[in-house]
Image 1 (cartoon, rainbow, N blue to C red):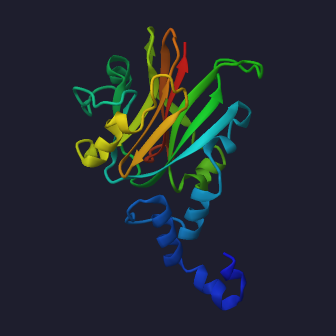
Image 2: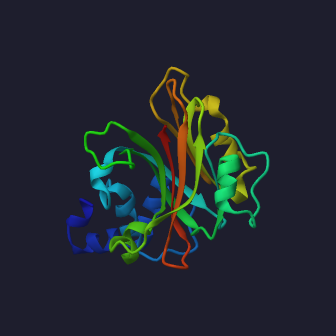
Image 3: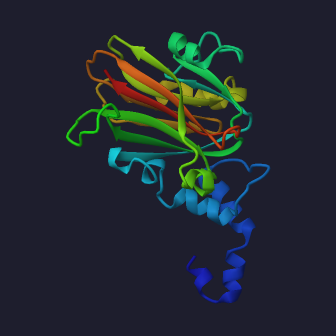
Length: 255
């Protein structure tokens, strides 16, 4: 960017789309998508300007956040789970999402927008009340398509998150976990990088949040002190009434 300020010739050269495409793919460590709807310069800025979803909405609920990284949806189906292992049975397309979440703590969603996705770990205040003094917190794995923040439907508030299922655990649980897989790659080495917990999950007495991203998956885990259970919520955002899924959230809150 400093070079682009030298003169007009350098400015035209540096603003060339191929340069920003190269920089974006290099810094995000993802393959090239078949199509993008915005310039690569704008995509790069959106990915690296420090913005996150709670900077646009519900700022009063936000406490802290951490950028995890980027991953890539090659297929249009995603496996969402609250455990760092694959479910014994992958939910079928005809099964109700709400039912599979309650029974297995996992679900499959379809019509996901393919391409580059950005993943963040969010820490927000308890959504049950509006008291600023409330000490309750909620951990959220917050993933979005890289183009989301530039879409008018998102900026004007037309696109909103919808609940697709909740899971209530009424006993002690060792950790709060959220995982998003590209369904096509759940049996690939990319999934193994997530499922091999010894390489990234903290020791039992380590309370710091940990996260892992691979080319086609992302996961978070926070070890928990003695507790009485966990409430897990699954949400998606669509790009319009009948549009593809452009954002996914898996949130955990102690009960």
